[in-house]
Length: 150
Image (cartoon, rainbow, N blue to C red; front, side, top):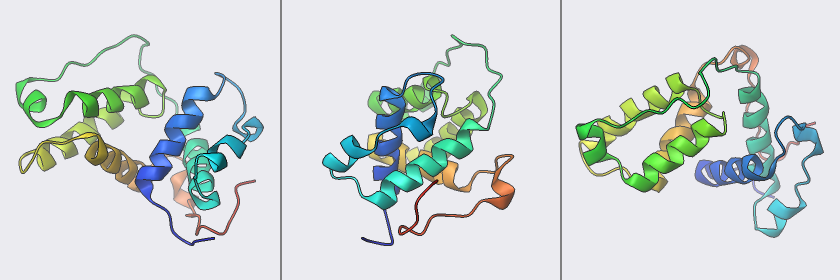
């Protein structure tokens, strides 16, 4: 087992879990066998579950059905697929509206040099989630890759 993992692969694990998880069901009930058959490591799965548990504690008082439209500059800098990925995380309630705005701001800054695609938006989301302050992050402890989430 390795002591490191790719944040982009962790985001893929999060996407998979959120797409198959029944709304309201406990993460502890999620069977990770499918993820292992797709080639994800224990460290990547543990990190994704850790991030999901931490983000689940953050409530988002957004009204359901609200939709944000990119303005012209954002449209020129962010690919439609990257925007779709960002909206998917928002619709799945992994990111709040404020999170989306912060991530868009970072993407626009990066987009001044080149167009932001799916891989880059995943990296921006991962970095934002990893380093953003949440009510429970004051006692955050990062998993080292050889640890399990209980």
